[in-house]
Every structure is written in C-alpha cells, then in structure tokens.
Length: 287
Image (cartoon, rainbow, N blue to C red):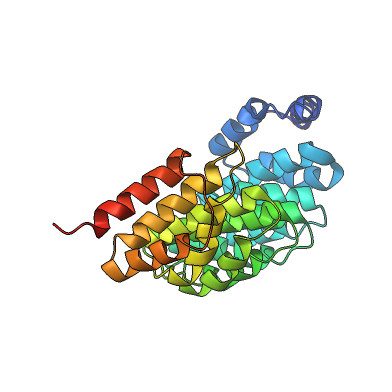
C-alpha cells in the first residue's frame, strides 16, 4: 500500500484536475480502497476531506460514499454527509445512486438520508437528493416514504430542484408507485414560468397516465401547453402523449380531452397537435 506522501501526491492530482472534473483521476483511490485491509487509505481520505476545497472535496467524498455503500458502513456514511460543506454533502449523495447490492439496511439508510437531504439549505444538495430518491425506486425495496419529500421538492423555489423532483415522481410512477398525491402540485407546475419545468411535468403526467393514474384534473393545463407554438416542442410532445394515454383509457376521457381542445387555439400543423387531433377523431368514429 502507498505511504502518506504517495497518497498526498494522488490528492494533489485530484486537486489539479478538479476544475475539468476528470473523474478518471479518482480511479487509483477506488482501487486502493478495494484492495486495502487496514483502513489506511480510508482514514487518510477521511482526514483529507475537511481540508480540501471545491470539487476536489466533492470528488473525494464521492469515492468515500461509494466505498461506504459497498461495505455497508451506515455510520461512516452518515458521518461523511454531516459535513458543513454543501459540495461534500452533494457528492456524498452522488455516490449513493447505484444499487445498494442487496443490503437492505444500507438501502433503507440511503433512502432516509436522501429524504433528510430534501430539506437541505443548498439547492444542489436538494437536487441530488431528488435524483437519489428517483433511483431508489428501481431497487428491490419500498420507496413509498420518499413520496412526501418529493411533494415538497416539487414546490422548491429553485427550478432545477423542481425538474429533478418531477423526473423522480415520473420514475416512481413507472415502478408502479402511487404518486397521486403529487398531482395537485404537478398541475401548478404545468404553468411554471420555466419551460423545462413545464416539459418535465408533462412527461411525469404521461408516465402517470400510462400506469393507470387518473390525471383527469390536469387535462386543462395539459391542453393549454398545446397552444404554445414556439419552435421548442418538448412540452407539447409530452403534453400530447399524456393526453393520448389518458384519452385511450375510456370514451369518457377522450370526450373530456376533445371538449377542452375546443376552448383553446392550437396550431394544427404542428406534428404533436396534429397527431393528437387525428387520433381523437378516429376514436370518435363509429366502427
């Protein structure tokens, strides 16, 4: 194993490359941690993190978080996250996005740490918390406790947090979680000033509709997105897909969408709008 001076040289290389965020420079530390039997490298990195700055501190925190996730050391993971440095907290969460490898205790700890982080004072930490909660739904565990935290994140004052929380809600819906309680805030976010928040929200509603959630209350807001004729079309594309998924579930749903379309002026030459209108017309034609 390398001595302290050699480890300091590796740290210096991380500091030099932190600006470009070349994560390959972290590979030696990851290899050393995997190979060691005495905790020498881990102890060195634990001591180093508080004395590092910027992305360098975050990069080393990421390495340690991944190691603690792999070894199942919840206590050391929580101690790492307890840092006063928001970059360390953010990258600790980044290191927890992969599967906890069948360790139910670690999976639960990660879920609750991310829920705790959803109330962090730093927007980047809250964003990363939403990303971890999104991934937790993919593993063999119950991520239901994440839903109230996501409801709060959907109302966050920072648009990037709202977007990531919205993607998390959509992914929970894809994994068959009941996220119906998120619908009222999703409706509000369809009218958010940021177009990317609106697009992400329409996508989440599409995923909800495709997994048998009732998105009927959001139909007026989704139809309203179709009236935006700017060149950027992701919000229209996702809104049209959500409306189609909803309409196909019953004749009553299809009728509701048609009724709402009468109240707005949309450009019928835009392909998203045209596909929706044509499909609805076919559904209304007796066979």
